[in-house]
Amino acid sequence: MASTFDPELIHDVGVFLAEETKVKSSVVLLAPTCNIQRNPLGGRAFESFSEDPHLSGTMAAAYVNGLQSQNVASTIKHFVANDQEHERTAADSVMSERALREVYLFMLAQKTAKPWSFMTSYGRIEGVHCSENPKLLQEILRKEWGFDGIVMSDWYGTYSVDLAINAGLDLEMPGPPRCAQARQCG
Image (cartoon, rainbow, N blue to C red):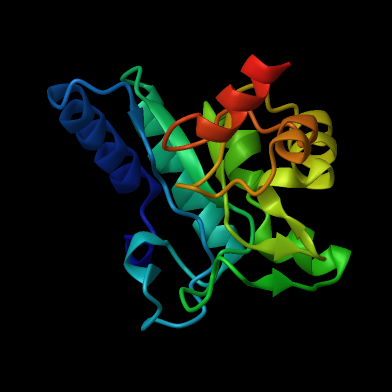
């Protein structure tokens, strides 16, 4: 869709998908996917917008604004660096702070669209799982960017309860087996 270079069209796609979401009796759409499209043969490349972070952010913002204009929550995913399908649950992305901020984070979409939720990726940044990463979830997403919505894991994408909760993860998907058990046990 990003190859259209038409944010108004992508906004309209968001509006259309919001109506489809409501027909399915849902209020949240787990989209858009903002992974950087490094290889067109990547397993999830069809969900992403572009290899260009600015174009991806612009299109994601239009998509989010279209969805949320119809009172359907968007979920920007996968936060962050989920750009390969092969062994994505085991990947550890080691990168400079500059690359993290200029290429892989979705600040443009957050600042211009205010999505209601984010989904963490399976992988790790500098050895720390994204769903347990206080730098990503607390320092950058919440404090620097002012995000006040829900942060959820990808399906079965939590690895420890205490680290995830303390890092700022709000919702374990697809359900709360680990987090609920930990809360019940005190």
